[in-house]
Length: 581
Ligand code: UCC
Ligand code: FAD
Image 1: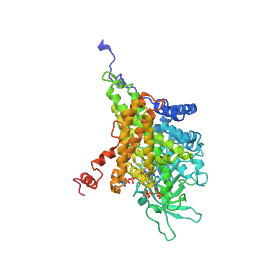
Image 2: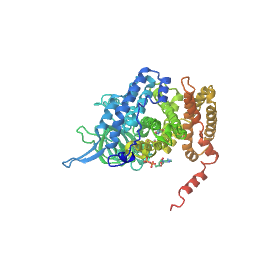
Image 3: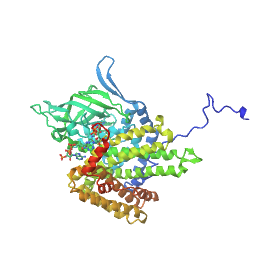
Image 4: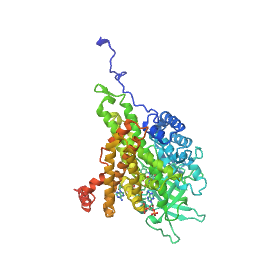
C-alpha cells in the first residue's frame, strides 16, 4: 500500500522522471539536402563515404573537443614567474587537437589540392560545414588561414603558402587578419593609424594598435599599415594603405614586436582568443603594391566571407537537426512534440530558411571553385562577386533568427548553459558583425554593381531567368516560379529606375536591395533544385514555402517613398525623439 512505498521525494530520490537529452547523430547521414546536392553535382561514392566517416568523427570526437574549448576558454599570461613579460595566450589541449585534426583532414588544404577539380571548394566547404558547429570556433582561424593562403599563393614568401595549406600538423600554420583599429573596423581607410617604417633589409617595422584580432595564437598574420616616407609623412585614406605579412611570434617563442594588451570579454566565440595588440616594431613584409592594401586584402575578404556563410548555414542546420531529434523525445500534452503540428510547423519554417541558405552557400562555393580552376564564364565571375556579400549578409541574419527560434524548441532547457545550446546563439550573433556588418556589405553590393557598370546585375538576371525557365516545366512548382518571375521583374524595374537615382537614395535602399537579391536568388536555387530529376516532394514544398514571403522588399519600400530625403529626415526624427540631440 501507499504507506509502505519508498518515498518518491527525499534526499536520495529527486523524482523518477528525467528528460532524455537530444543526441548529436552523424551530421552527414542526417542531412538529406547535402547528400542530394552531392549526388547531383559531385556524384562520387568516395566523397559520400569520406563525408560519412567525417560526420561520424564530428559526432563522436570533434563535438566534445569543441565543448571542451567552451569550458576552458583561453587566458592571457602577461608575465612569467620571474617577472619577464611573456604575453602568452594559453589555450586548452582541445584547441591544439582541433588544429591537428584540421591539418590532417585538409580543411584548408582541400581547397588548394584541387583533387576534385572545379568541385574542390564544394568538397572542402562540405567538410567545413559538418565541422564548424562542433569545432569550438576553430573554423575561425581556418577561415583566415584559407584567406591568407589565397592572397599569398602567387607570392614568393618563404614557405608560407605550403605551410598554410599543409596537412602535416607540425608544418601547418594558421593566420590572423588584423584590419580593425579603435577608430574603425568598417571604415579601415580612415581608421588605420598603424605605420610601417622601411628597414635597410627591405622589410618593415610596424607600429600601431590593432583593436580586434581573433585567434591571436596564430603563427602569422596579414595586416594593413601606412608606409612612412623619407620625410616622415604618410598618405591618409584608402590610398595610403598597404598590405603586410608577418610572423606573430619570433623564433625564440617570444613575440615579434607584438604586445598583447588584453583578451576581449565577448558575448560569444569565447572558445577562441580575441586580443587587443600593440604593434611595437613588428617585423613584416609588404605583400601589396604600396597603397593597394585594401584591394589586395579583398581576396582574403572573399574567402573569409564565404567561410562565414558556411558557418552560418551550418549553425542553422545543426539546431534544426537537434530540434527535430528532441521533438521525438519530449512528451507534452499527451504526445511527443513531433506530433504537435504547430511545433512541427515552427521547425518546418526553420528548415526552409536553412535550405535556402544552404543552396546559396553551395552556389557561391561552386562559383569559387570554377573561378579558381579557370573554368568560370564572365557571368559566373560577376555572380561570384555579387553573391559573396549577399550570401554573407543574408545568412548572418538568418542564423541569428533561426538559432533564436531553435533554442525555444527546447523550452527552458534551450536557455541552460550546460546543455551547450545557448552557446550556439551567442556564437551566431557575431556572424553578422565581423567580416563586414550587414549594412557595410549591403554597400559592398552597391560597390560591386558600380565597379562592373551593372554587369553583375545583368549576370544575376540572366542566370535567375534561366533557372526559372527550367523549373517552369514542373507543374507542381508553378506558383513558386510565378512568384519569383514577378519578383524578378519588380527587381528589374527598381534596378532600371535606379540609374537615375541619387547616391543617397541608393544607399538608403542598399539593405533592402541586398535582401531582395538574396530572396529571389535563393528562390531560384530552390526551384532549380526541386526541378532536378532526383528531387523529392519535400524539395518542391520547400520552394513553395520560400516564395510565400515578400521576395522583393526593395520594390515595395521604394513605391512608398521610403528611400527619399524626406524619409531619411523622418527616420532621424523618430530615432532621436526625446533625446537631447
Ligand atoms: O572581422 C574580421 C575577422 C573575424 C574573424 C574571422 C571570421 C571568418 C569567418 C569564420 C566563421 C566562423 S577581420 C575584419 C574584417 N573587416 C571587414 O570586413 C571590413 C569591412 N569594411 C569594408 O568591407 C569596407 O567596404 C572597405 C574596408 C573595403 C572599404 O574600404 P575603402 O578603401 O574605403 O573602399 P574603396 O575605396 O571602395 O575600395 C578600395 C579598393 C577598390 O579597388 P580599386 O582601387 O581597384 O578601385 C575596391 O574595388 O578595394 C576594392 N574592394 C573590393 N574588391 C573593396 N571591397 C572589395 C570586395 N569585397 N571585393 C573586391
Ligand atoms: P562600426 O563601423 O562602428 O559600425 C557600427 C554600426 O554602424 C554597424 O551597425 C554598421 O553596420 C553601421 N555602419 C557603419 N558604416 C556604415 C555606413 N557607411 N552606412 C550605414 N551603416 C554603417 N577585426 C579584425 O580586423 N580582425 C579580427 O580578427 C576581428 N575579430 C573580431 C572578433 C569579434 C568577436 C568581433 C566582435 C569583431 C572582430 N573584428 C575583427 C572586428 C570586426 O570586423 C568589426 O568590429 C566590424 O567590421 C565592424 O566594425 P566597427 O566595430 O568599427 O563598427
